[in-house]
Structure formats: C-alpha cells, structure tokens
Length: 298
Image (cartoon, rainbow, N blue to C red; front, side, top):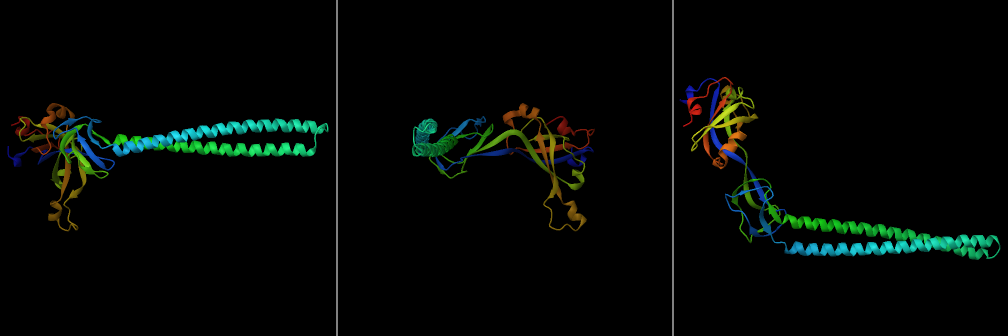
C-alpha cells in the first residue's frame, strides 16, 4: 500500500531505534589496572566491570585507622584522668565537711577550713578541665572514625560497577590507562524502553496524544513491533527565529517518541539493537484499520 493511500487515522514516519546510553565512569582519578567486561557483554546492575589501582588509597586507609586508634587511646586516657579528678574532688569535699564540723567545735582554725575550701575549688576546676578534655578527645575520635569511613568509601569506589543492567556498547580505555575524576571507562546501552523518534508537522501532530497505539516495521524483522506514543514535544523543531508566513509555519515539525511495549521487549530481547531502521505507523484514531504492511508483516 502506498504511503499516500494510508487509511484515515493512520500516520506514517520513519527513524532509527534508540536506547538510553549510560556512561560508566570513575569517581576518583587513578590508573585502571583491570577490565572485566568486553564490548557486547550483558552486565547486571552492581556487577564489577573494572578495577583501579588501590595502592595509594590502601596506604591512606591504614593511616586513617592508625589515627583512629590513637584517638581512641587518647579518649580512654582522658576519661581515666576525669575519673581520677572526680574521685579527688569527692575526697576534698569530704575533708571540707569534716573541717567545717571540727571548726564548729573549735578544734581547727579558720585558716585550715579555708585551705580545705580552696582545695575543693581547685579540684572542681580540675574536673571541669578534664571534662572538656574528654569532650575534645571524643570529637577527635569521631573525626578519626569519619576519616576512616571516607577513605573506606573511596576504596570501594575504586572498584567500578555497572550502574544499571545493560549491554556494553563500547569500552573507552584499556588496562593501564590513567583517568581523571569522571573519566569514562565504558558506554552501556540500557535495554529498558527502546524507542524511536519520528517527526510530524503541526497538522498531523494535533491529532496525536500519548498512549496512541503504533506499529514499527523494522528492516530485518519479519513482524511489526508494537509500540505506543510515550512523548510529544511541546515545541516545534527547526523553528525559525521569526515565523512570519503561513508557509514557514507549515514547515515546523514536532518530535514524537514511540516506546516499544514491554511485551515486545520480552519477545524480541537482544534482536532489538540500537540504530535499527524502520517505518512507524501510528493509529491516531482508535478505529482506524492498520495498513496491510502492518497487519500482515513483510
């Protein structure tokens, strides 16, 4: 059936099948020492794909652990000092109470009672200082623990994993390459929701809505693939800076995205490849009959 003889309510376009591409990149600069995936491999989310050199970060981790141990020892020492100061304060308070009792019976002088009172004040000041030292040691221990966690996280990040389940389109580097932060290692194709982008002029796009049924006849596949309109652009493509004439307005086109249904994704699996060319037919009216090329396949 010629394209100009399509049934009413059927729109036609053509394009290429596209997939979402995801870059697998390093978070920290360093040397890539091992690559575990090849082009064309299917990888699962979280699967290890590459390994960076960890020598420097391992040394930083050991240093951070040593600092954490020293901070913990200092915290324990300060706590023991505080306990001793608190015990001394208790003893000085007991001696002051005893001195006050004895002074009341004129058994000791006022000078001795004052000496005991001064000793209590000095012990109290020592407890306050020791308490502050314990708090500072606790903060230092927390900072050391945070440093250990930070370096440990950086160490984990040197093992590069797949962010999503997908297929390796190509790998950017080879073992031994030194990458900056954010340097790409692989390019993945996300196999979920393959789509085709087609363009229609204003007169045709006005009859479309998201959810409209579509069929895509791919070169190389015997049967049409079911799809649906998942996106209609709100602005025209290739719009002149100033649109003045009706002819220019007729030349405007809108981008429409056709998403392959999940059932068809499961049916065709790896047969659907990025870049496949095909003809798209959209049912802008639910009662419109499909043309023969769609109804019977090729």
